[in-house]
Image 1 (tube, rainbow, N blue to C red):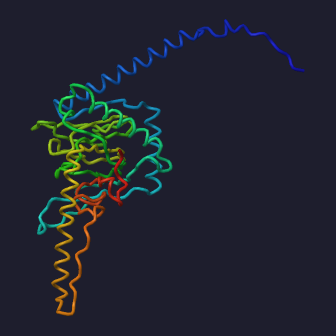
Image 2 (image 1 turned 90 degrees about the vertical axis):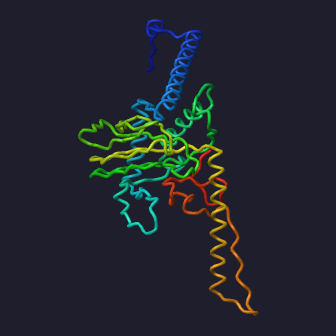
Image 3 (image 1 turned 180 degrees about the vertical axis):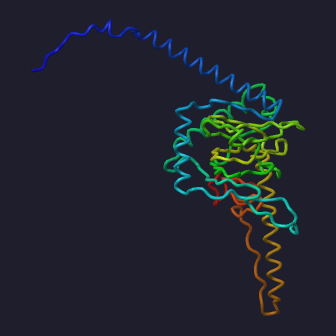
Length: 325
């Protein structure tokens, strides 16, 4: 038998939400979030103007940060990471340097549409929103000098402890277009006194250094060029970070033009050398010079294997899949 009882809903709902109250509540909530977002962007603009470095703590919150961390751990445990690329500016006759003496991290490039990467995609989308906002706000200082419309895919990095590190370097020493470096950290209860792994960076302008601990849910921004040399000091426990680089449109276009010219020059020299080796006579036709291809970039502009140490080839090139717009 089914019986029914009468419920006093007025007493059950101790805080009734009439439509007008709910509307007011959500409006106030949105206003509060917008004010926080505005304050966040203004602080980043001020920091970048003064120091070339900005640190944002508690960027996404514990729950979202843990989802990202779990995705990264799953990728790492599945063996999806590879050794970080190493490129030096040494002269050809300089002695070779082992890669693990320069950088000891393992990396994976993530666009966000891969299976099991939805939370990493959410992170990069949130960083995109902040970068777009600070780049287009009024009175945004140095950031107003750039037109940012592209970025790299996310570089997910793991320093597996045992003193792995990355020596002092500059992300963009050759004007490849990258202007802002953004790094998000995923390390719970990190204590640099025991675990090391500090990011040591020279703020702008700088004879001093700033030591940044890679704390969980911390996001940092700094200039990608020679204004901010930085290093990762030896890490003694597993250290995770996700990095994206943002391009200035003008510098990026100039870099791609230089790359195409250099590529064309290299191809022409190779064709000339090949023709000389063939030593053609009156009955032999010299081999034609190979056509220059926009999708074939020299090492200095290649996708993740050249001097960029990042996946930064142009999205207009047939072989490129590393730029996000």
